[in-house]
Length: 133
Length: 180
Image (cartoon, rainbow over all chains, first blue to last red; front, side, top):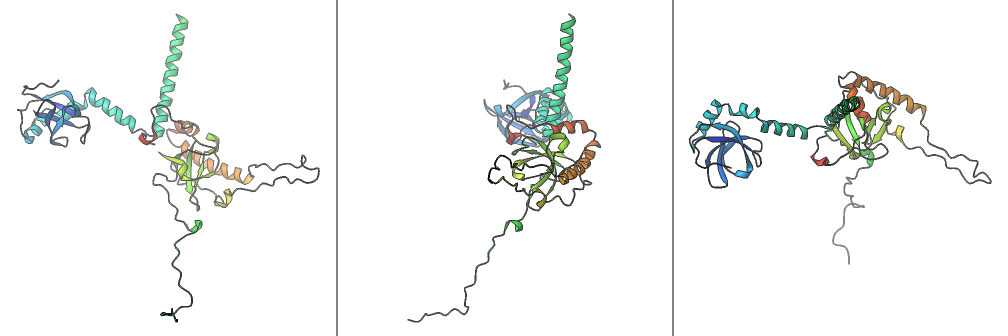
């Protein structure tokens, strides 16, 4: 849920739309369903987005409500937002999904071979343990 | 009544005919298909197999080889329409395909059908297609070179397995969303 009267504003991740996958900062709230976001360091222009186009992260930077892009850039660089985001689970999951979709036919074959051999080893050790017990 | 206009030529000039016969057609090749690309065959006897593309013949058809030892696909011609080009490419710059391997080489041979002569219907044998020695020779010559190329790569075991495996789609796999 979005908190409406807090002065600290969270970094958010744009999920849908033109800037999908990019990080931006909530600068202000427009109404119940819209936010003013800005991502000067990640290439997201200062725009109004719908709340459901975006997913919230834990990263928080200290900016006054409605502050200018320049200040957002300075504060986000100071807080090292992009590096913090890259260490987060959300980013890692998105990266894994992206790399899986970009896998070529040979890559898929290698993944299958690895999975099959791994499962075989697991099953054989489980069987051995079952037998010995 | 006399005609108002007398043409100065005896015969009317024909319009230029831009129709070209098949041998004069421009051969195109998809940018994703380059010599050494691994292709997935989608139709024909060898459908689902992954083969190595050697070169495009004069007729525009693609010359491929299994290699035969890995998946049973010999030196063969196929149309690029029935093929998916993968991103896996082998460096076959040094592979020399014998010169005699061209479109004429692959032309279908007409097999003699037994004629119904008197009392001979069950005696005459039907001619069955058999692989010529020429083909076997060229197959081994080309395959040896291609296999040597694969053997030099670090992932050679996986590549041997890859070329021997068949391609198939499973649940939630959509070709238009997949990268090949």
